Length: 524
Image (tube, rainbow, N blue to C red):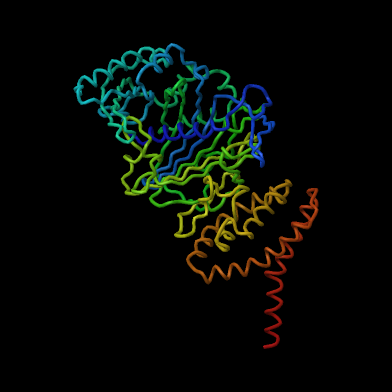
């Protein structure tokens, strides 16, 4: 019942926290930031990162603990003008003990509600033992009643009071307050109608006409099981507004060759036109959340793994900027893990029946590009093998320069092995610098990821096979070193050298052994 809402809060809070790290600047095209150099002196560096409070997120949640897959699109902003929420309502919310307001048609939004549209006002009330329970309920109800009329007017709803329920004592945070959910309901409305109502009442024409993930969200409302959720989450001086359209279906999916856009049923994702003129690297994001009973690692990606956001300087490139794997339920879960995320009194850990649950969180940013394709989002994810953890490098980065080769990584034991780094640098600095090379890598990656995870797994299980692969890779690596000495400045040169290397390897791996076998047969 609560799990979708908990995932929403986890996504919204964590995404904004990560994205806002580098969302610096004004409306001007160019700005300066101070960065330390090697002599610990500060010097100005020009960095044209523009800022718009509106952000869009496409999310895929793969829950292996329940065999369910959720896809969603979220539009969010901390500027109430983007969602046309009255200043008077925001002032009321910020002056109350309100921790969140959730407007949704999710099934069974609270106890006793089966099929309805709900507005839940979640409130912290003094949990002093000197105050009786009924008095606490009354206090929460009074706060809810003081803002519900304004909320109804702002959203165009006609909800009526349903119930007030205590959800949890926030022992996790050491707070001396209890969380009450004051729920107001009206007749059930499908996500398509609720989204259209929000468009008419709240979402600005500027956002609607800019397309991007807004169009994807609108199309998702056509699904019969789509869920509408609009949240307002107060912070110190502002409110995070977010509308999300999601759809959850039972099913399992292989992680060895994971294509998020196949799950979203999209050939490509186009970002909002609001971000086309200027540099807005942090305003469009693809978020992949994978819940599993075993720790997972990213073995390879087609796109570059650029690095953790706080350490990235230019933000010019598109790619995976954030990869984090953590245990969120179990004895070794960290104190700042998702167990601490609370909505309606339910923690993330409460919704899992498994004793141990891990979360793999991945985020892809558009950088300066305006769209992302299926191939760019291809991933290979596998359970962590004992003593082989490829993705736990400093700052949760798999690498600083790009995704690794699965087979080479398993063969040489680490993504930081010289052979693996050589392959990565050759790909990024030579092959991907031309259109023909990029097209080749696109087709090759689709083929490569169909078998490489299985080969890499078998290498770890069978040391003899691993050594055999290491010997087999030596001629290939030797032939590829020739490209280091080639001066490739055009498409024709890339094609020429590429075809030459391919023919050379065909000769070494197939023609030469065939000739040798034929000569041995003649001698016999």
